[in-house]
Image 1 (spheres, rainbow, N blue to C red):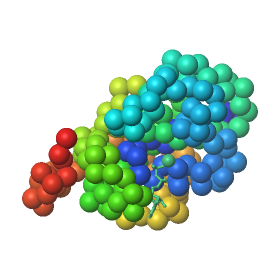
Image 2: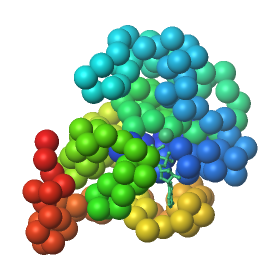
Image 3: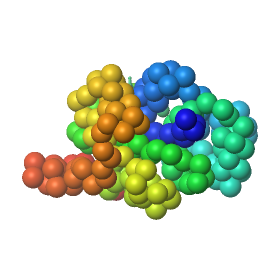
Image 4: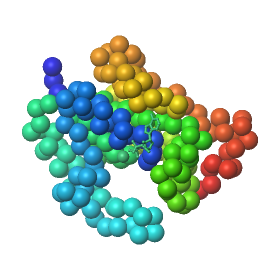
Length: 194
Ligand SMILES: Nc1ncnc2c1ncn2[C@@H]1O[C@H](COP(=O)(O)OP(=O)(O)O)[C@@H](O)[C@H]1O
Ligand SMILES: [Mg+2]
């Protein structure tokens, strides 16, 4: 079987790293976390102090990933909210966009101690489907799987991902509508601030 290059993307705190590390273990795949790779390979261009984030050199990262994927013999799992933007499309076999109801996502971010600005930014990104839109812009649609993991255990999500990889479960995009859900609950203004 040809090696698989699996992207795990989604809004920060959605649960990417928790799932991706388990998936890599299960598949005996190489796990690549792009935050770690940025540090290790000096792929940062600058620091955005105001937003508290690192601006990466996307071209450099794309070259690095291309070379790493070429020389790796095993399956590869790539973990980052921007994984779809920087991994060469021809090499990618599967893209999983993890989604979490903004109400639960906010609880996760609060537990993690994200400040208010960061919470608002990430909630907007989740409500406006930013990672999904980026995946659709940068990768082949038929490879993209949007998974609503709200309220699910990591094991449940892992089983769903494996079922998709084994061809036992179809892939869809367009499965969530947080905007509609929040609007119906009268909570859209509370959650979509920026
Ligand atoms: N299925 C889950 N159920 C409950 N908590 C989870 C689940 N997946 C992740 N978490 C928790 O949510 C937080 C964010 O998860 P993490 O995997 O680090 O997200 P990301 O890598 O997308 O930023 C962590 O505190 C993690 O323990
Ligand atoms: Mg992570």
